[in-house]
Amino acid sequence: MPFGNIKFTQNIDGFGEKGISIGTFEFDIYDDSGAYGMALLSNVTVRLVEKNSRCLSSKTYYIAERSVTNDICHFTAYDIMSQTEAEFDASPLDIFFLRGEKAPCGNVLDAIKNQCGFGNMSSSAEGLDTFRFTKEMLANKSCADIMEMISEAMCGVWIADRYGNAVLSCLGEDYDTGVLPINSAEYSRIDRHGRQKITKFICTNSDTDETKILQTGEYGTVIEVKSPFLAAGTGLENIVWNRINGYIYNSWSCSKAVVNEIVGASEKISFDGKGTLHVNSSKISADSSGIYFSGGTKPMDDEQWNYDDYEQRQINRRVAYDTTAGNIQIS
Image (tube, rainbow, N blue to C red; front, side):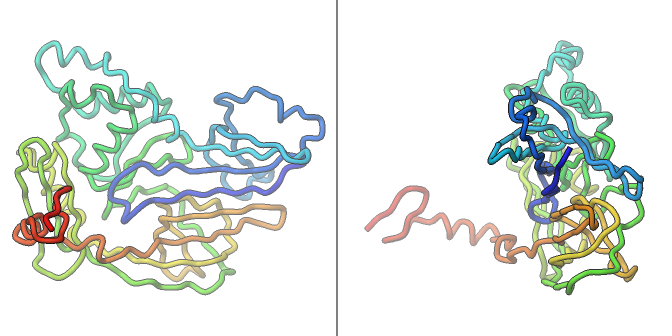
């Protein structure tokens, strides 16, 4: 079966402090018979396997899109994180709600795991045991919505590992893939784009508006989070701050490198064995000649993370002549 144009891509937004990262697998098949162009492919899975086992097999992906041009059938597939858009079924948690209790995070994650088909759900850092969910928090939410609530409070990003598990890779304590850092001995120039140090964490409870500020007093990057799980008397903000305090985000890029494995986001790569670099953005192409990587960690705009103190925020909201403030302008 002639196939080619193999591409894997995955990105983590920002510093990797919130959200869900979905990996993409694209490939072409020469389809002169029309068999693949006409096949029913709903929820069909696909993965790439090297027949001589010289590298690990790829993750499992779910075919989502197909197009045909001149007998070339192009497929786009997404990893298991794409299954999280389904509406969350909270009925397994009624045992807690009927007793007037909140549902522990472990039970909520078990329900998501069963609905989305994950083998397991875990976190690279402590803190999940502090989460408690009311019925209202889960109503009319997708599984992705709930996972994003957790990721934002924990300052981490959900990724799928190679075995179909969901892992919350937390800022300052990355998920350990269990695989040695992927090495490259042939690569283009490594461009460095600067480093940023986290020195302030601002937590606002979205239910009570109570705010806690944890900081070192140094100039640096600010992470600001609004969540019902922070400043809620559980101490979660202290757990997160102990992890991200002083974390240094190292931005870099490489336009092309020969690698010995498929490199995914949140994994690490080494160039000539000279230390390791964290990967937030990965593009992989593969053919009969080898596996090729481009990516790195994207540079962040300092201005995006600057924090205005309370007084400045009040000034920003003031009504002034010829200035719009909250949909109002006086001229």
